[in-house]
Length: 344
Image (cartoon, rainbow, N blue to C red; front, side, top):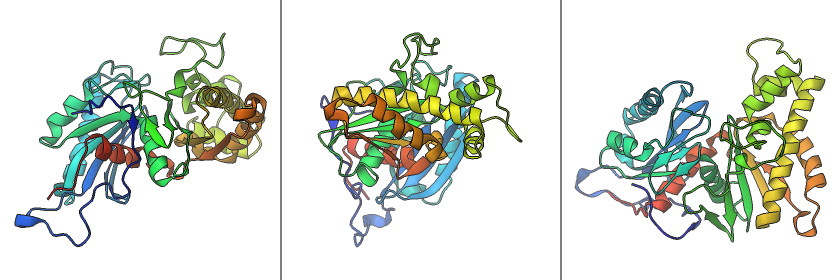
């Protein structure tokens, strides 16, 4: 089930995820239920983990997302990840499932329509996962919101009054921290920065709009632009990681590909700051692993876009939790959204 709370602000996740005190013993010989099964679903990979009360990933599973195939094939991959987690000897300790999915999502209906998974449109993901995990409650959020929850709990944005936390990977998503609280919006899509327009004359986006940030800054977009501009990988398959390696080696096309992405990100981040007065942007996801190749030009471009006095101090940071942020955040959100207390 999903949360039906009318309050769009979600408090900071409790630092113990509601865990049983360390000295407590379960009654009746039943296993202590102190773990969350977390899913992070994106256009490239479906990751799963069992997450403890300190945000540690005790078991991890990962499969490729068959994004170009049918809805049931994609759901089969999700079921496979859950099945592997269920075979863990730690599974009896699981008390809920948290899902961070590429969006848009609809938390009220438990449905997802990821732009980068075409077969899933209004797909009833919460209901389908509930059918797999029996009596365990299930909570759904967008992957950007999950990253925001993780970074607010354990990462760079712990002390932030207002922050934009982003995932830049196969797609581009985001979540907002406002007044020191996670802000979800009515459907759970607040902060979904990947589909704001940064080029009024840009190409048509799969979402239906034009010139969306995702068309410039996502991993596939960076790779496609570099290849179209004449870049070729030295070995293997063209990918954003390969473009980043080439940029670090000084390849001018690869460098330009990341500068183009950085300019688009700077435009989107500064526009968000002008609307919400966020003080920092935190970027995670696979593209963020490029490091200085992305962040150096991004900080330079922010100086050109964030010109108003109240946004001029905007800072940008790499996510502290790296590629694990989505899983940690999904676990934290499940605990908060479902109002869980420790059970035995």
